[in-house]
Length: 115
Length: 111
Image (cartoon, rainbow over all chains, first blue to last red; front, side, top):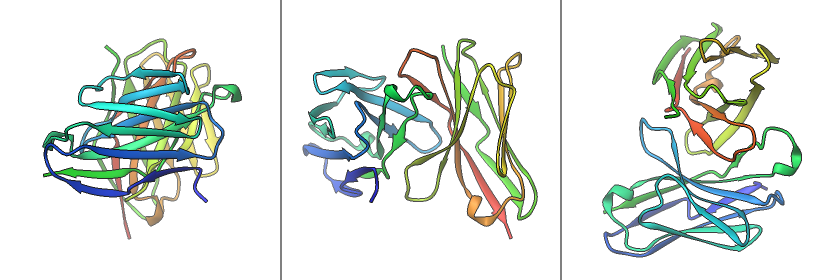
């Protein structure tokens, strides 16, 4: 079983709709992240959470919100989707307790298309 | 500001060596990573190197770091068709959570 899972894997929605992307992890990590990937660009950080009560904005948080329901779950919401939010979205986790480079582990991604 | 740059494409023949290059700007970078992204999949950590190292080898992968020029490279020996993917370079400063990713290099391996 995958350590970091994302649902749905693909989603097509219409402008103005609210949509939620979900991420779950079984790695026991404290830190979770949401990234966006656009063609020809690197990953951009949307939000990150160091624990259930600690949520922070990343580089491109406008138009997005998040919820950390539990240590293992971190969801990303688009309150009113717009076409330029069409992208590939990745969830990632990391555990600073390892002492080894705070390595981030990524989910398989959710491909979102906003028409 | 911080930036990580990579060329977008690389094409090699099966059995040859591939060298993927990356430059970064943050002189305080402590950790440098290489991730692989196969079609339809997330990013998979291949290897990382500490900034106090010059080289790291792991089976077919060799990472070289030139701190003076802020240049990182990933060499894949005996490249196989299964190595076709997008390779991302990323850097992080110790004590911070923040990764800076490059744009990714799409490696195409020709049979």
